[in-house]
Amino acid sequence: MLKDIAVVHTDQERCTCDLLYLDGTVRQLSEPAESLFSRWCISYGSTLEGRIDAVRRLTGVRTKPPLLIRERDVLLFFPMRSLHTTGENYWINDNQLAAVLPERRSSAHLIFLNGFQAQIPYDIRMIRRQQEICRTIRDMLANYDKEL
Image (cartoon, rainbow, N blue to C red):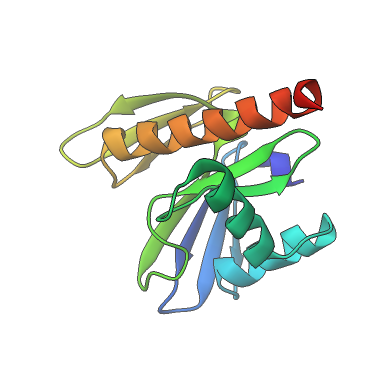
């Protein structure tokens, strides 16, 4: 299930991605993350491009917008680099992320709600900024019905 994925690690040059699940298992796919995300979005009634565009319009974020996969439970994955960046990238499931701790210079320790932990080579400030954007999206969706 999508909600059980903690991190999507992608390598654009090799056109592969790894799904790191909350139980610690890893599933390797021979497709780029963009293709995977596109299939997920279509299964929930929209295109990847449409979802990214909507987040950009709602938040004003132009670079590295989070991806709203599903509105029902506000399933959000946020990237550490742009979707179309070559090389490695990490997409983190914001719904399952409980805490972020600094590990060492330019590295962060992720702690998920079930206690699962992972380390990624990105600065904690970048992660916290992405979490802030995800909170904004959640607040907007929670208040949407109130505004009608």
